[in-house]
Amino acid sequence: MKLDDQQFRNYCELSYSILQCYKDIAILNYFEMLGKDKTPFLPEVIEVVNHVTILAQKDLALTIWKIKLDNNPNANTVSKFRNKIKYELKKEGLSVSSEKKTMLDKELENDLKRMRSQFLAHIDMYRNDGRIEIHKLKKALDVICKEFNSVCNKIDDDRVHEITDSNKMEIDICMITGMSLLFKSQYSAETNK
Image (cartoon, rainbow, N blue to C red; front, side, top):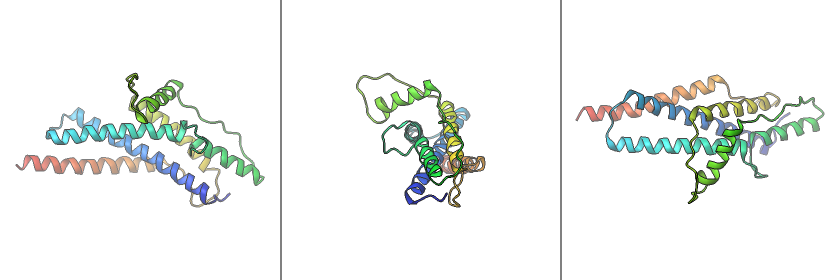
């Protein structure tokens, strides 16, 4: 089955969003490592690190919500993409295994929904202060990626590829290298004063 233009666009958006989440995780892991190393930085750099950390955390949580939990009829979620591909395959008379929608941990799902409605998309005056551990978001992302890959494996289109462990490792290396270069140049400038 070859994807039409809209289906391919949906595939590309989901693939990009999932990879973007892995980039967020790599950046957050790098900042966590910096914190453990107690690397000295200028106060202005610390402000930037804190700001980027918050942006990456918000982006990660909101993107996971968008690609998995958004219930808007027009939302491009992995589950809706899976259902659309399954429908198209049946229409073409192709055999389709009955794969079930993958589910996130219910507590995490509820936390993401609450955070999205009270904090990420809105700033409620009366809200609970919530926190979701990054490792829980990564676990959810891995579940979403697995569902996405199972759909990709059913599509006979040379433009469609699953997200592999190599892709994830490449992101880690690229993000760590880029962040290291960024902070190395800042640290070198500081020590050469």
